[in-house]
Image (cartoon, rainbow, N blue to C red):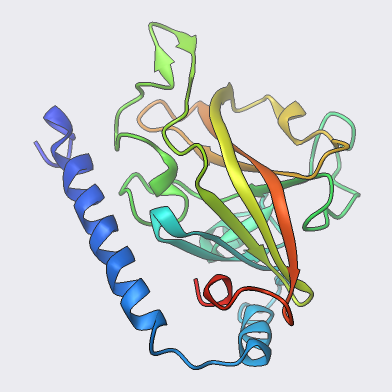
Length: 220
């Protein structure tokens, strides 16, 4: 029952674990005296040979904290964490390097179908196509609306808010087309129907330098 998430047994258990982890994280933050300089150095520490680290992505409500690298189109990149994704209809070869806090910043990471690893926590019900795929129709979800997505690099922290989720086929790369407004587009697989991608959309709310970032943002 747990493995197949019958009657949402797995999802309910994972939601409890998420709340507990968030509580523990908040408790530890109260005693963390790391300086902003220390945190900014950690964010850009190069940890994987052959990949160019771009920073970190955090979605606090889902206990997601992943390094961001530069290769969303290889197993090496996706196994290392999140990666910027930039192959679009406008730029099919991915020549343009995206910039945090500007335009459409695409991110991709694996959904390991466990509700915890990679971007797995962005699927509303583990191992359930619903509510994203219903009777062959591509739908979406608003269950994460208003939650924070934080990107961080050497320059500072980029504070986004989730505006919704949509479902697309694995061939629809137009979701990564450039935009005038600053947004983040997060791509992860749907399980068990793996020919589809859950797209989590976020809109930029604030940009902070490391000097003026609220202390709590830096410790998430």
